[in-house]
Length: 485
Image (cartoon, rainbow, N blue to C red; front, side, top):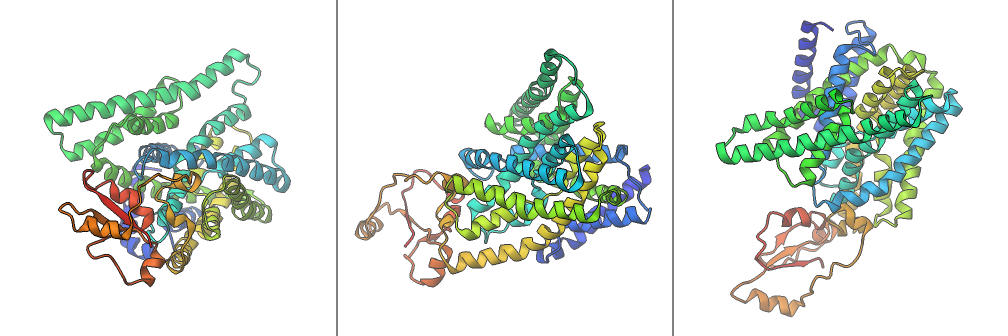
């Protein structure tokens, strides 16, 4: 791709996304559907030719995956306490393993793939896509803990999948095969120690330096926004130069900032989201053009059969089993909702590109099969996001669902009593007549609140699953009384 074509493609991507954003928010179409379709059209007509080893694709893919991993790690604490993501991540880890095994077995049976290629395919397709899920996790009609489970899974399973994928690529490509234990130990150190360590140091030290510089010199917001992107790129480059993995470094750079309670300007979140959005949409176009020449290598019926197994069987079965074993406090509607929304998208394509570019035999076939599954998933999950969120929202508005009682995802799995003091109606009335009355918070469920027009005068309305988020911005020295019936 020459410079003019690249500039034109970026410009058109940004312009089209801006013009249709309002329509996408209101309709069953999503940005991944749109831009993957544009790429397929450009590739099929020969307007845009992209190969597996195209430098433009490699740059965009590396930038996109680095930004996505960094933002995923950086935002792990953003929606709640650290415990909010820990339990779901541990619970959904076995679900990811079950999905990998199910898809690998299907690849062997339907497509005649070798075991190593099949497991590579399973690992690639076990990654759920935060881009396709975005409309779901932003819809406040869906109870917050359910949205949190989905967003945590999309943000953490990549880091579960990526190390496994790198090891499988090394085995399949012959790197380290036939070498002694020392060579494999060195390979493991490069993957699991050097990359994460480099990223963690750069992220933590970089955020600390900016905090000190801003406190002393008052750094302008636009430069603080650019600074965050600089940490991502520096982490990736430094890890690669030192022999580690740049993507793991980018993730651990963001994780270190969160874990050590360092901060970056909120302007970075806005700028980082915008930069990631542009690179993701551009990546969808490039992958669409790439797939236009790749999909023909996959037997149509077998490929569609594998897509059906991955979307309709492997994920729902794995998540259903895990949630049942862990006795999660979820209604049947919530379980079905979580089981369905495990879309394959950009991250799967990025991982598949690593396989194809890593010298793996049948690597391009793995990429082509991944592309077919992603295409089906993007269409089905993207088109169903708005109507299914609306359906679930109506269920929540019409009846009391068990998941509404919890403000965090952790509460769904850890349902112990919190030991809060209880106040009788008479006691509350006396407290309200005192010189220091409490703030009364109405946390009835949506359906209860809509059915009962009676409220306590002066009370504040907060839906129950948003209490923790609301409380974070309140004064700590005031008394609060919550009531739900």
